[in-house]
Image 1 (cartoon, rainbow, N blue to C red):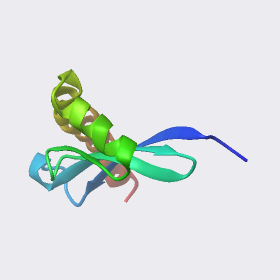
Image 2: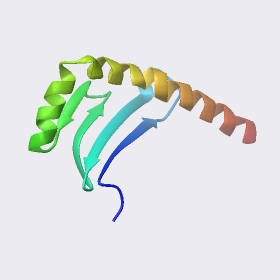
Image 3: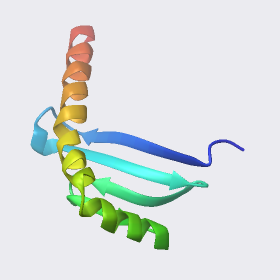
Length: 90
């Protein structure tokens, strides 16, 4: 019941400073996470046999560069907006 294959993108942060932000991209199949990129680790890591092969492939291609850039492109942009929205309401 539900989605068989899905991705989750999240930003973990405690300030708007880029150094305090972690970008995490996880990919799942049948509710099992099989590969993840974390900006703290700096590369894709696989958690299943297929995930290890996929992570190795992604780490050698343009996907790694894009994932590293997503920390600033995706997280920093949205966190700045969220912080301003929260500050104006407090």
